Length: 197
Image 1 (spheres, rainbow, N blue to C red):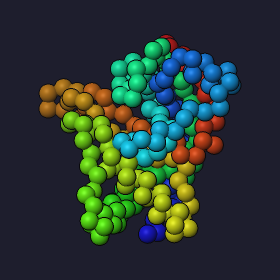
Image 2: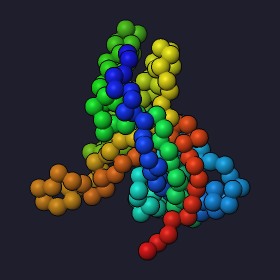
Image 3: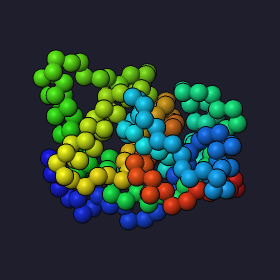
């Protein structure tokens, strides 16, 4: 499966990403005591395995640290900023990327059927926070690309509608956001403390 329009899959500018976590880890990242955040590698990662950031939204990163972390309660919530060069990016706001993910899903579904296995499913309420199917598809995409000798993606970027409508009749939701999963840690050019103004 060769992806057309590869020339345009590279991001051409730096992006600011924000990650909610423990205050001690934020301090270690900013001071240089820690090199990087750890990759999320669970079954339910929306964009596959990677280091996750909220694009341009420190408030949402902090909210997640305060009340959205399902794995373990964060004792001293804080947010760290990161300067990101997304490099060769699977950007799910573009048609070629969406078509590549769709084609991967079709191959993965066929593989599950041939082996007599049930396809994983997304679950977790109206926003489907437990994205086992999506995670499986994105991870399979990376494996298919490696197997066929195609260049590896450095990052994955996608918009997500989340929460209730912003107002009656709205197509917008209260917590719409763009999520970034960094696969290649070299995409992270530095960490910083966001300024509240």
